Image (tube, rainbow, N blue to C red; front, side, top):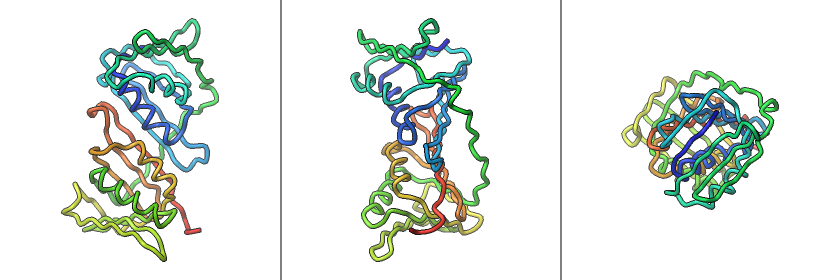
Length: 244
């Protein structure tokens, strides 16, 4: 049993956050909310999304798993306006997800969850954690795209730096005072694909606060809250080991 009612904007945000990584996902439905863990086809990037019942106007659920095609869900969501009410219900008899927006109804076939294994998010110990506003980080990522296909993130005791390019370079350096917070035990530096990282940034909105975890030749983990703090998101991206 699963039923969630709320503003269209809530469901739109869910699709927005996850679809930058993957389009077919398993919703792990529980009475404490629902949870998504997914990896992209190349196994380079992961997303973890946890949504509390408080994000919705009404939420009723028992433990179940639903395989959802986000492209199909997005095609009906985009027909509604942000403040329109939306109702998503699992019809056990037909084994379909029924979405209602006003008098518009879409009955979606679901994906086979047996082909979607439960993912384990690596429990990594990061030597550096940086907190800053999304707008500041997004600015550096956009600038880096004009000179390179990779970006280097470096954290030291008193600064955090984003750099890219060789012949033409982009550099964005934050002092500790310019950040929301900085914790760094040892200098940490890793290289990442801008294609993947910039795609992830499409799931992050202006004004949100980011926590970025890095290490030496380590994955980067980017965490933030959305939906008025009722949803938590984490992106994980594997490093590039060399510049091609």
